[in-house]
Length: 141
Image (cartoon, rainbow, N blue to C red; front, side, top):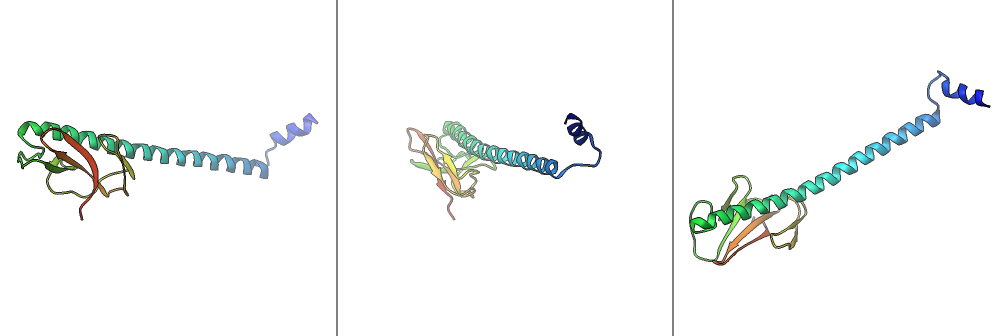
């Protein structure tokens, strides 16, 4: 019995059908695991990018308050002031830029969840003379 098994394992005729199916199954499972891992990573990095954009907007608006208003160009309007974070130039501007959220669910500075398709939401910054309020809003078309 051992001799027959050893002969089958050591033959030089190539792979059997069962061996080919097993290899195919293992490769397919490996591809599935890699693909799923890539999707999870992309989803987590999109959430991180949106959170970092919110933190950047908050830092810029806080810094701009030392010049008299939330706008990066130094202009100060009457209170309440409302501006939008521009992620390209890292400034707070009066005109709403195009949407730039990466994820479909984003979190505001106070923990509120907002939903919208990617590239449709912008960070809105409001200042009422007492404190900053940052939240996600739909872009104006």
